[in-house]
Length: 359
Image (cartoon, rainbow, N blue to C red; front, side, top):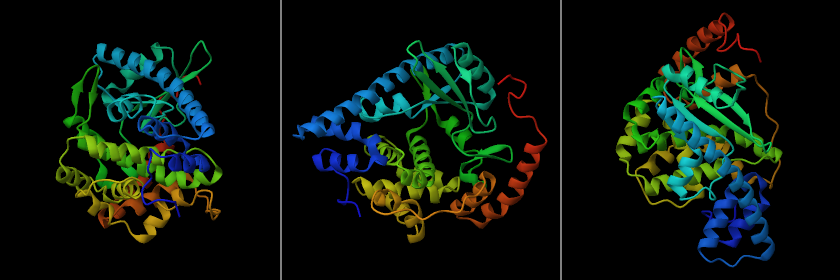
């Protein structure tokens, strides 16, 4: 059991706990910055190593921020509508500075009909296409700078999801079809980029956290650094700072059948960070005890007990299992099987994007 009801970021106790649980180290730069701003007197060794970690993350963030600015300006000039997701723009909007929030790559969303144009622009900027699965909801690019450092970019054609039935469905839920188009319809220009409506972006942040909760409960037991606490902090700050209608947010969640993953993300956020009472707590409270034990408890137990071995399944089967686990309507459950079968057949008989390109 973790030592506090909510994690108090501006304290020495919180920093000591984060350092004792390396899977959560990505939250250290922000926790240290909060403690620093509050004038917290930290032990010398804790202060030194926290400052060093923040500096190393900041150097990476500044490199990515420069590349992000370069690419977004080029896309704006070329008439490509682009939405920066997470990364430096979110760090500035929510935290007020790059030194608070680590990130390792850039995520840029473009409309599907502009994907080829955006891809060509990124290649012209000196990047290489290193996409491992061209049917994924994003393409992947890498550029090596003169210093030897690497910049990674993910160019999204959809916000999130599995490629099923001609769309990328969030968690394979059939009712989520059209979510990306919905967000584009409500997006608005901001500087050299576009920005989602704040309620839609909050929904996306919840889906992104839910995805991490599924994968990181396995990675954490191996000692790898995870992002879930940092992503939950994003959501808590967004809830406090953004101007959105909670009832409209809930209506959008319901519209696209995303109550389970969004409720999971909100429950995790409210478990770790104190939030004012909102109508969203009711959605978070709908999580079953089994779902809570499966997707939330791992973050408390890191370093305190060993993980049970899990049955390994291939990605296609995992996709179906997750679709069933996240769908809260039998209509979605019944639709997903023929869609997966059709997608499997199409993949076996189609040439992937960029197949003629030398790799």
